[in-house]
Amino acid sequence: MTLFNPQFQILSDIHLETPTLHPSYTFFSRSPTRFPLLASNLLLLGDIGLVQHHALFSFLRYLLERTPNLRIFYVPGNHEAYGMPMDAALSAMRTFEEHVRAEFGERFWFMDRQRVDVSPTLTILGCALWSRIDERQSEACASALTDFHETNGIRDRTVQQHNADHARDLEWLNEQVGAISASEGYRKIIVLTHHSPTADPRANDPVHADSNVNSGFRTDLSKEACWTSLNVKLWAFGHTHFSCQYVDEEDGRKKLVVSNQKGY
Image 1 (cartoon, rainbow, N blue to C red):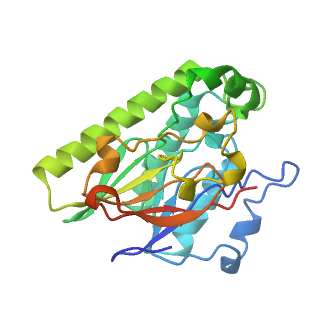
Image 2: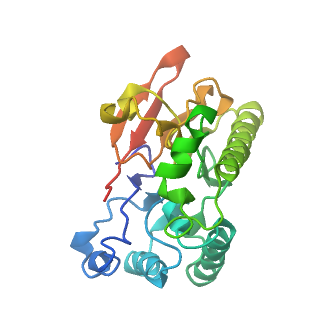
């Protein structure tokens, strides 16, 4: 999917770590036709693969080597950290960012609460935007969501840490959008997150409308500055395994809301 000039390709939740016995990292790097690049800016919005798999980094390097003008903006998902502590996963991604930027230049950005000005009038803001798990769903989420399983999920991860990361991401987004809107009002803003920022039915699979764990996937930000700002023209996300595209036109906004998710 593309928007504006320059153009952007949006993709998330391709889960290259699957199937477990034969992960698909190399399958998609054997031929360009298996992973077509449709724009010079690739927005990878999390759950691409596991950081503990060296093949994830080989795949990303393959994309950079294959297309000399490609720029990758990589938002961390929850699956990236499976099998290790969250801090270790984020550190490994930042180290990879340093190495490939030393080799390829400014063509890879790890969007963990990061701002990138891609032009004099266009800014990209990116973070995981962990969801805010409702206290009433806390026990169900801790039990049902793999994130909180010590063996298969994120090591030493708790619902409390998850919610603390949500608060940190949301505070950062609101501050960034507010500052840009106040001092650089001419700028258009693209927001990239892994978790969903909306409970809008257009953005959510109706099958899960009454799920007792849906707060582990989405958070209603409809009253937050980062959502209501007229400067935000595009918000792209993943995590829900439900693709959508619609325009949020509330209160005079014209914000394109997009998810393009492969899923398992």
